[in-house]
Amino acid sequence: MAPLLFEAVRGNDLTGVKSAVTAGADVTLKDDDGRTALDIALQHGFFDIAQFLIKAREEQLNGSIGGARAAGPASTASQMAERGNAPQPEPQIQPQTRNAAPKVETPTEEAKATPNSPPPERAQPVKRLRAPLRDALFALGQSAAIGQPRPTPGIGEPDACVSKPGRRAFCVVPVDWPGEVEDAFRVDTILYRGARALARYDRGAASHFHALFRSDDQEKVLAFLEKRYGSPTDEWKREIAPVGEPRRANPTFAWRSRNTETGLMTILEVRKFDDARNVFPDTGHGVVRLYVAGGPPVFPAVSALDIMSIDWAARSGHDDAPPNSRRRGR
Image 1 (cartoon, one colour):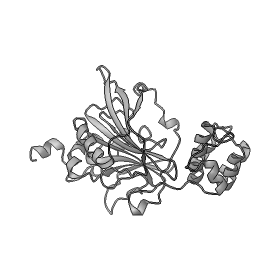
Image 2 (tube, one colour; image 1 turned 180 degrees about the vertical axis):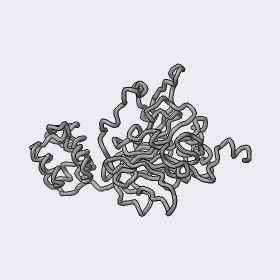
Image 3 (cartoon, rainbow, N blue to C red; image 1 turned 30 degrees about the vertical axis):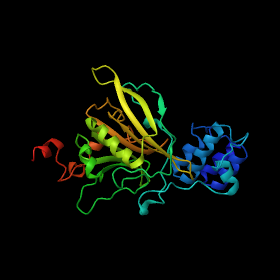
Image 4 (cartoon, one colour; image 1 turned 90 degrees about the vertical axis):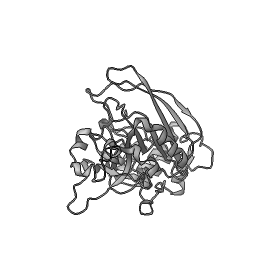
């Protein structure tokens, strides 16, 4: 059934894909170019097919296709195929983006470390503090959410984005944090100044956010998010290796939410030290990351040099004075 599956994917034939999977096609097989059916669907932007194949792959790895079907109230990919229902996009916070689906991709070669990158961090255990949330709509500030459209500059304004092949863009976007926590996110870095975030857009829709805050303010950031979403669902035992210093803990907490219709998991993650930029860890800044589990990253898909190539006026604003300057009244 594998040739039929690949043929159906290349032809953007969702019905044919469902039929091949239901008949037993192995979705983890690769073609002569080393690509899975999911890789091909993502490459061509066939996201309805990609959503279905992601679910089917999970089921096959768990033995629920081609063997005993997993029981439970949630619909499996094979059951959806039999009913003719494809997974639906995850709802969004803003009404104008509720129908925008997160664009989930599998890791590509660009996401692998380069020979000049720092040594990878050792895998650390995950402590599950409680079950995932259900259908929680995470956001940075009041409105920055997965699935929102790429911002467009006004007339005469500099573009705050870097475009990459494959209809990808990486932008510096303002974040409307409430006053009680905004000061923690008003940073002055080589990437941007002020309460902003780095955002990745795939085919025009936001898929990942990366927002810096001062490391010393992690407790303030956690308290704000706990008030909004309750206690974290996970604690990740991470470590960092700063240049010329002993290894140290990198306290990391996360909130996970599963969409009950699509099965997609959205993650809101807080690290005390930003070690997610494919460079040595930044011990002066922590990071809040918002993304769909298994989705595409911001770094190393884009580099700090790429971001720095954006006009500085687009990476800061007239009211984005450095925190220390504001405290001195300048």
